Image (tube, rainbow, N blue to C red):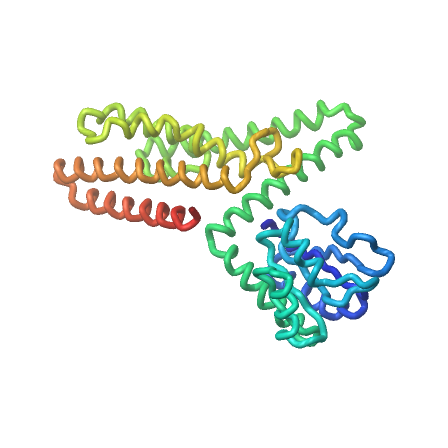
Length: 337
């Protein structure tokens, strides 16, 4: 789910639910998402109401009226819809009682459908949407949403600057390129002076947390330092698995952060990549994260033993806390498997 919340809505008269639509859109906006309603008017002139509907990944909720125009039956349409939208929440509504609606759904052999009367529709749908969003608005999921949205915004900014280059500079972008290069160099020179001072003062903690020290650099430093103490580490395989961290973890992380998601041959892929990110690929990535979490925990345990031997109880306690933090991360990942 991105910052857009998408509803596919089937009804024969939009005016009958206009007030409900406005209330639902207002609620979605207040929750920090952009509402998008794909409204399909189903009347006698519509041969197949389900023709041309989006793929399941592009819909967060389906709204289905029972008595549609042209003898179309919402319950029967929902049964057909379920064959394509197996995991998407569906709200089946009418002026009839919820009990009557549940009987219709039961007779069609459909599972996982919410039923509501028209007069309670906005409250019912509001509760369903808030329940959905509650599951994705914890910190970990929010980080993913922000990362995806920010990546898209970064690409839009790049396109804006490229268009400005064509419009304002008539395609001759030497001046703009020189200006941008000068800005980058100035920023980097200032940062170089700042980092040099940290090194001179021996401020290791600040240096290790310095944003310009990239994950790949930090990984290489760690691997080099592990070689220096390898004779005192209990697990020789720790360094070997760390060598896979870049391709198995950092590359996918960077792809998620900087590549736009796009549909390719019916599957979601990241821009410039061919491998689709379906449920199996996501599970495989979580398993790799768990494996590297275990490896890092083992490394921390070995370092804790070394701290004890060296007579550094406070450092040993700090390393023990770090192990607990890694274990908590692994537990969170395991819940998603």
